[in-house]
Image 1 (cartoon, one colour):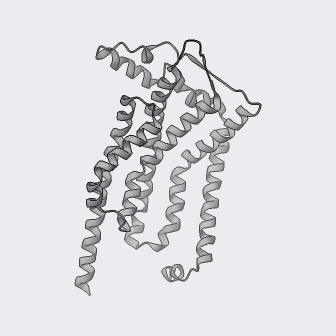
Image 2 (image 1 turned 30 degrees about the vertical axis):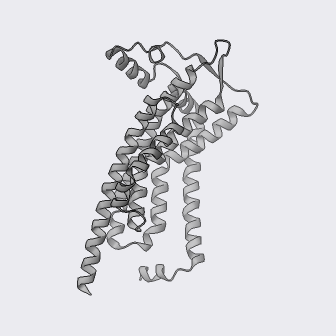
Image 3 (image 1 turned 90 degrees about the horizontal axis):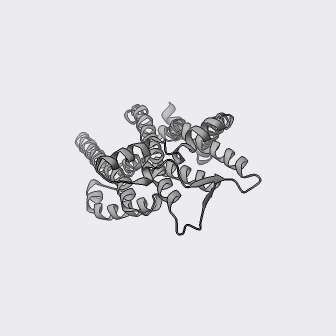
Length: 278
């Protein structure tokens, strides 16, 4: 009966259904954002501003690694960064506070966002596909949070270390605006979280027949070039940082090929079974 009702839904009914899912998503982001807004000390001092301190775990690890291999890298083993963070606009800090809270709300509410999107498309799926919804939500959220952590602990400190210590002349002092600093952290974190959703994207593209394992393998070299370009965009322009970022993305690409192969194989078996039964 429910299936019949779904099939009889008009285009406007689908739009109305989508509207309510979007309202729930926005509400979840706003609620989580309000909570984040209430605790600026934790969000800014403990999270956002931590990567600009040399006590950050990534710098300590890189310092130990450089000493272990015999490279005296003062940029990772220094006492502090040669720059300060400042605000030059009257409403600068308030604006950063609001937008950062929204970003945090989106990150925290991401599993619920995926759940609502899945609820919207689930009426058009089979019973077997609906049973995999829990796994889909968990895997999507896990990949996203892994990307967020990768962006926070790898891309962000590498970017701050390179850009914050870069100097064209001793006459120039780095006094970085808070919007520039926070924008870098937010971009690195969100970009990584979205990039780590690559296997999920490939799964759906393979499901609707837009990509195949053969296609992904054939254009692997082009994918490598795109990944390197993407790494150059979201990281400092040094080779080491680009390689560090490119490696997990390439691993995700290989995993995506395997996922596409599983999807195509299942669809092929399903089609053969349907042909035999008919």
